[in-house]
Every structure is written in C-alpha cells, then in structure tokens.
Image (cartoon, rainbow, N blue to C red):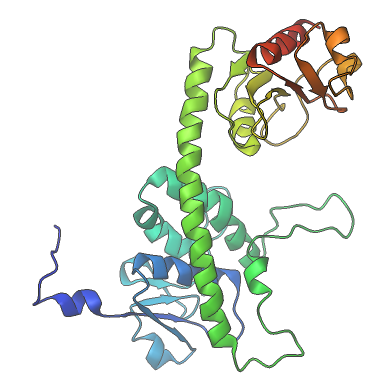
Length: 313
C-alpha cells in the first residue's frame, strides 16, 4: 500500500526520526550505520548519542547500543551475549551490517547493488568491529588502510579534548553519506558493465580472446574474466589515449598472476622507434610492459593481431 502525502498526514512524514547510538568515541560501524539511516530518511533525523536507557527506549532506530537486536523494532545492537548473527562466510554482523541488511536494498534500489556494497564496504567494517581478520599482511609492519580510516582520523587525538566529538561525528557522518551514495552509483555502473562483458564473452567464437569496445575498470573485467575458464587475453580501448591495449587475464580473481604473459622478446619495448614492431611483425605495436602482462597498439586491429600471435607463441 502506498501512502500519499496529504495535509492531514504531513506531520507523520515531516517528523524527524530519532536515531540513538552510543556516546563517547565513535567507530566505523556506528558512523556508517547513521549515514545509512540519514539516506533512508532523506536527512530528516535527529542523532542522539547516549547510554541512558530511558533515552534509548525513545529511539525510532537504536543501533550499536541497548543490548538488543530486533529488526522489526529497528533495534540493531550486536554487543549482547550471542551477538546478532553471522553470515554464511563466517563474518559476524555489526550495527552497520544489521542496518544495511534491512535497508540496503531499499536505499540502493536493487538487491544486486545492495549485495555488492555489502561485500565491498559493509562486511570489511563488520569484520574489523568484531575482531575478525580478513587481510593477512605479507610484508612485516605494513597493514591495510581501509577507506573508513579517512573519516575516523577526524576523531580527537589523545592530546585533544572530546568536547566537540558529537559535532565531529555529525560532520563525518555526512561525508560518509557522500561515499555511500557514490558507491551506489559505482555499483550500478559496474553491474551494467558486467552484463556487457559477459554478453561479449558469450558471443565470442574463440573465448580465449575477449573483445570489448569500452574501457572498463581493470578490477571489474579482471574479476569477471578470471572467474571464467577460457579467457587468456582481453582487447579493449586503452582508456587514456586513442590507443588499444591487450591484457593478460589473471589465473583467478584472488591473484594477479597471469594465465599467459606476452612473449619475453616483446617485453620492455616501447616507443615509435622501438624494435617491437619488427620483432612482433605488427606495424601498429607501440608498447609491451616489462613484466609481460600488458601491451599497446595504435589500432584495434593491431592489438588483435598482437594477442593472436601471443596465443600461439
């Protein structure tokens, strides 16, 4: 049932929703959960940061505080004994994940988009908040820097007082709103691109070489094509010039190791006067990366010719 706005019920629509979370220092989960609720309610919210139970009970949305999880009542805490559920992959929910689980599809307009953002943005924050490692450092003393740290860095340092922490929370929450809205737009674009890439794959006679007419983000086409068994190379516009590129497909989405590098004799050669044209036999050839995973040509036909030669090399 759709409720239409009328003069008699405008107060219902205009009522600011009370969003209650804990006071004191803030973390990614309560900050991002607040941003989701801000988007959900078109910014028409009142944020109360407290641990006062009588105030908590007055909230329209209560999250990361209160000791209860009840989605129907908009109670989204996960600190109580037993937590608030664990995903199939083993990552527990934090307040951000619980709020996104209920409202993500509603604010993004599509389940696929909501799921993509859950994997990309929500689950890493939920994991960290619950003390679950999802990244293993391979270089001693070098650690992953998450996007959420950009906002958390505005919290007062140990040398600064916390008298302004609530206003800082609100300021950074609005910055997170921009990020989430942008992630929704990026996800929409990625889904459209994914469908185009898979359509080209399905139409390819030789699925070892996939031809694309658009310059898509590398993380996207590599993830999609490396998840398929046949692709070895992709040919597409370079994205930063009128040239075309050929690129080796990774063994799997979990690694950057290529299924087949371009010939060793081509690697590291570039420029109009390089020997790449002579060695490859392709007049339009202009570049081959020294590691062998990428090459460039002045034309689409030149890039196609290069990767076809590389397939049988």
